[in-house]
Image (tube, rainbow, N blue to C red; front, side):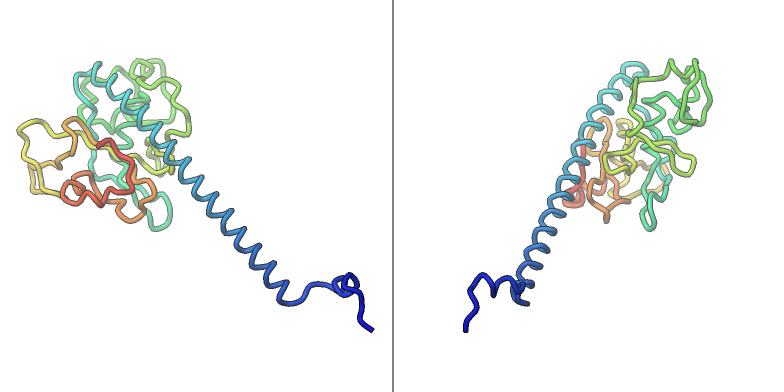
Length: 224
């Protein structure tokens, strides 16, 4: 005698049905995770763009106050943000000090115009350093400390890259470096500022490297 359909179904799923259910769950999980990762990348890029806008506005105030844009004291200063990942932090340290007013040893020539305070950054500023603040109420998420260095970071928590344009008439090195007395060119006539964004391959590249090979900067968030 055949069992009613309802009684046969009560015995449980078949192996084929279980495989179908598992496959559906796996696909839904992959779609959810992919959507989450996409949303997170978009959020980090928007944060980076907003931070860059705030930096550029503050740099204009710096220019109005000092008649020039800040120049990093060191063009080659690296920190390891995670195992196997090193970033040049010289420009990001310069931006931190120039805009937040906390120290001035990362800004070339700043010792001649500093309004007081200590040369090294300490994460805070005293009464004399307040005079140097150009970005008031800078949110803590905009900067971080690593290996004793304070620097401005993008939405990915990596150092912003910054290069001041060389003076007019200065001999520029081609592409990736030059001999003594030569300086790296910039794409803009004022300064280049950029974030590597999701690019985890070209993290030692300079803006000058993108002059001849613009595809290098395809994933970057930049001001050119």
